[in-house]
Length: 247
Image (tube, rainbow, N blue to C red; front, side, top):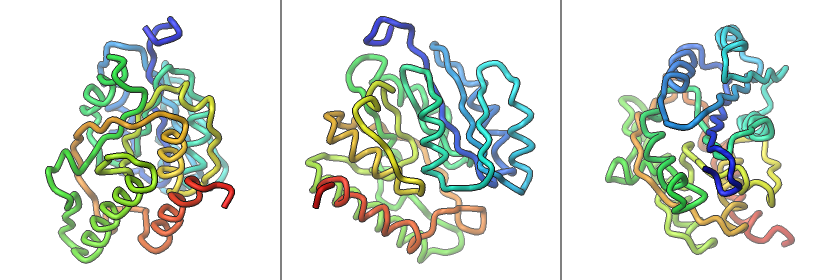
């Protein structure tokens, strides 16, 4: 049972944009995953033109699935916020539409919350790999090094500013009680929502517990969307923006 006495339910928020090669496998994986609690899958499709929208539409009437159609892409953060607003479960998990993260890690991610040990979990790729070099691209080794170094820098900056001890603040696997959102307001439209969410949850008193997770990084030739110069700096600036919002 959840803290308010209702049955536990997991809301999986799945933003989708141009992931035709993987989105069906992700949806099927989430639907088939047995967790011991009820779950709902909220898919937010952001105007893909590669066939993703049509694949998602096939699941629109599947029990336990809710599809939100955005007319045009407005950023991953915007899509995640739409999914969070539509969620009804006692616990929320954010899931990407590619195959970098393993759905089998759901059990480990949910356990600390279901056992009332925490209200907020981060799935750490660093702990899962036992190394800070979580990305090893077959091509683009320099890009992999830059992203790995940025991940370490982000974690150290976050820990310093927010007095935490995390190893992977940028992880997609963020799992938390939906009640944690009741005292915060999210506004980011881009990838920096990942940082805004963690910063505001911590400032609201929800320190994250990290759980090791598996990670199979794809490189840019395989469809990776985040870009170092376009997306990293807004995310990094967010640490300071939310630590001192009135500055």
